Every structure is written in structure tokens, then in C-alpha cells.
Image (cartoon, one colour):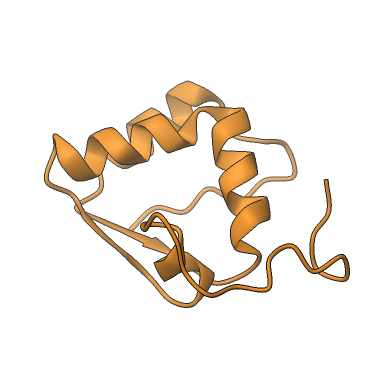
Length: 85
């Protein structure tokens, strides 16, 4: 099991290596919109999509970590109290 914990964003290569060596990708809860925006900014969205559709990785999560895998879901992610740009 490997986790990246840092104050600086991981590099694209770090994310790619972590995903390639993982069988299961688990995403925790939080603000769905903020997570998706961050993933797009880092390029993680395309890595996760490839992992799920082409590499047969198991993807899962709870709350926002479950909603993020779908086109839509019930969320309060645009609540100004929980969303930061």
C-alpha cells in the first residue's frame, strides 16, 4: 500500500507510477467539485479514466469519493462554505 502525502502537488509521473502499481484506487470523501477541479488541473482525471477503462483497476470510494466516478450525483459541493477555488 502506498500513499502520497505532501504539501506540494505530486508530479504527473508520481501519480502515473502510483496508479500503475495499484490494483485498487480508493478515494475518500470531501468536496466533489474541488476534487474534480484539482484532478483536471493536475492531469489526474485522464490517468484515473485510463486506469478504470483500459487497465481494469478497481475504483471505489465513499461519499464524494463515490460520486466522482459518475456523471452526476447529489452533492453540496458548490456550497460557498465548503468550496474553495
